[in-house]
Amino acid sequence: MKQMLAIFLTAILTENYILDKFLGICPFLGVSKKRDSAVGMSIAVTVVMVLATAVTWPIYFGILIPKHLAYLETIVFILVIAVLVQFIEIVLKRYIPSLYNALGVYLPLITTNCAVLGVTMLVLDKQAANPTAYGYAQALMNAFGAGIGFLVAMVIFSGVRERIELNDVPKFWKGLPITLVAASLVSVSFLGFQGLVTGMLG
Amino acid sequence: MARETAKKQNGLWHEFSKGLITENPVLRLVLGCCSTLAITTAATNAIGMGLATTFVLVCSNAVISLLRKVIPSKVRIPCYIVVIAGFVTIVQLLMSAYLPSLKAALGVYLPLIVVNCIIFGRAEMFASKNKVLPSILDGLGMGIGFTAALLCMGIIRELFGSGTLFGLPVLSSFMPSIVIFLLPPGGFFVFGLLMAIANRLSGEGKEPEEIGCAGLKGCAGCALAANCSITGNKNGEAEKK
Image 1 (cartoon, rainbow over the protein chains, first blue to last red):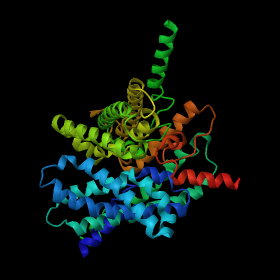
Image 2: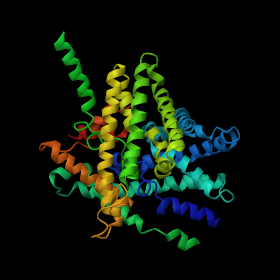
Image 3: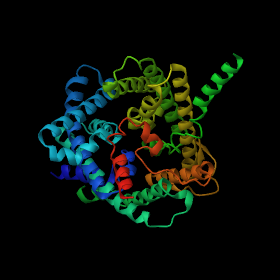
Image 4: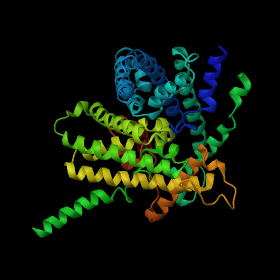
C-alpha cells in the first residue's frame, strides 16, 4: 500500500511527465488555454495511459521477451496504442455517446502524444531497475499517477495562462515565448517537490 | 531548356533551404518540442538527436513518397507510423551497436522520435504529395534546421549550466555554473528566449503566430487538424467575433 502511494505521488509530483520529463508538451501548450478543454484532454490521456499500459505490459512480458523480440517494442507499442485509441473511440461512440461528445475530440490527438508512449516505455526501465518489487499492478498505478500528474500540470497552467492573457507583454515575446517562460516558472515550483516522496514515505 | 533546368534546380534548392530558417521546424513551426526540451542539456546530445531525427526524416520521407500512390488515404496514418517506427528501430539498433553512450544519454527520447510531430507532419504535408527527390531534400532541410535549433539550445544550456562546450571547459574557470539551465525550467526558458529572438529576427514586426499543437502553419499539415480541439477553439473564437 505504502509502495503504491509512493509510486502514485512520485508520478504526480517529482516525476511529473510534463514539467520534469517534457512528455506531452504539445497538448500542454496547445490545449491549456481553457480550463475545460485542459481537464477533458487530461482525463482522456489518463484513460488511454492506463489502458495502454494494461495492454502493452502483458504483450512485452508475455510475447516479446519469451520470443526474444524486445527490439521490436517501439513498433509494437505505437501500433497497439494507435489501435487502442481507435478502439476506444469506436466503443465510446457506439455505447456512451455523451462521454464520446465530451472526450471524443481529444482522442485522435492522443495517438501521437509522446506522453502515452513514454509511460508505457519508461515503466519498463523502472521494472528493469527493480524487477522483484515492480509488477503489473505497480505499472498500472504508475500510469494512473502519470495521467493525474498530467491533469494537475494542465489545470495549473491553464490558470497561469488566463493571467498572461491580461498582461502587457513585449511584442516579440507575445504568444508562445512568454508562455514558455511561464511554463518555466511553473516547472520551478514543481522542483520544490524534489525528495518529498522519499522523505515522506521512505 | 537551360532556363527550365535552372528553374527546377531553384525549386529543389527552395525545398531544401526553407527548413533552415523561414520554416525552421522548431523555432517557426513549433514541431517536436518534447525532444527539443528534453535532450538539449549538452551540445553533443543535441547533435546526436538531431542527426538521428534527420536520418529517420529523410528515409521515411523517401519511402512514403515512393508509396504515396499505393497507400489508401483512409489507412495512411497507421501506414506512416509503421514506416517511421521501422526506421526509428533501425536507428536504435545502429546506435546501440556503435554509439552506446549516446544511446544511454538520449534514453527514452530516442524511441520517442516515432511520435515526433516533425516526421509525421512532413510525411503528411509534403512527402505524401511530392516526388521522391523533393521529399528527400525537404526531409534533409527540415532535419538540418532541427539539428541547428537543437544545437543552439544545447550550446546555451551546456555553456551556462555546466560551464563546458562539447565537454571542454570554457566558462567553468571564471564563473560558477548556473545549474538551473540544466534542469527542466531552464529548458523552457531558453526555448522561449530563442523563439522570441527568432520572432524578432524574422517577424519584421509581425506578431508571432497563435499557438497550436504545432503552431498554426504546422497545424494545417497536422493529420489530426480536422479533429483537433485547437482548431475547434479557434472556430469558437471566430464565432464570438
